[in-house]
Amino acid sequence: ITVTCEFGYTGKTRFFCKETCKGKNILIQTTEDRDEKGRFSIRYEERSHTEFDFLHVSITDLKPSDSGRYRCRSDGTVLLNLFGNQHADFDLVVTEASDFSKPKWTPRPLIRSTFVPAASPPPPPFSPSPSETIKSSDKPAAASGSSSLYPLLYVGLSLAVLIIVLVTALLIFCQRKNLHQQKGPPVKKDPTDFT
Image (cartoon, rainbow, N blue to C red; front, side):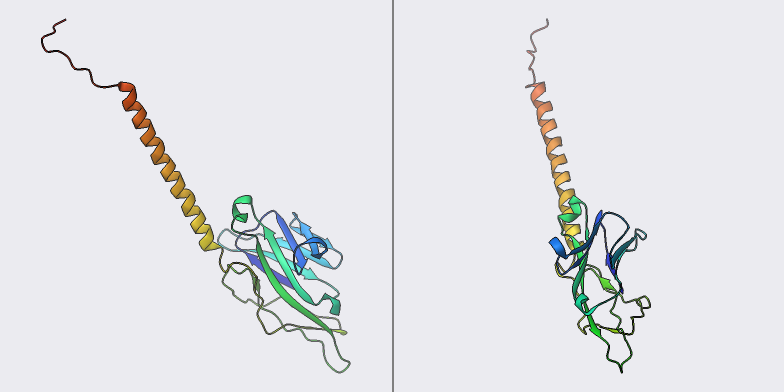
């Protein structure tokens, strides 16, 4: 199974985790565009500046023990991390198929980070083995965390611009004050002094 997470920005470090991205729960941590560890793989797809980047995470040879919540995460630069790391969570339920039922997979919508409006293109085709059935919960996957990164980004950038403007105005004021102090008070001439 492959799940696609979509991010407004991506950092240099990408994660695929079960539950949280701490300790043994980290399935893959990489700075590469592609990485694979056992049955788990990750692939980063950079897109144009007007589109969001994709992080594809995959699990092969699914087992019922694979059921649970997973997270794909991207750590940004220091500046972008001030607004939080981007991550998207999704739930996976794997059950054994009965002898009389056909294996089936209920597709989930495209997983997106919480700060990106969701659109649902069709998922890639998937064919589970005859002994497995994958069921998706009816509840849509939602990444935990802030509801929107972009307003925070705009506020941060606006504050940075405001600080730069104020510092520039303060520097101009100080330079003018110093210039007036260097000239000293105006010298008055005595009109009767002709020397």
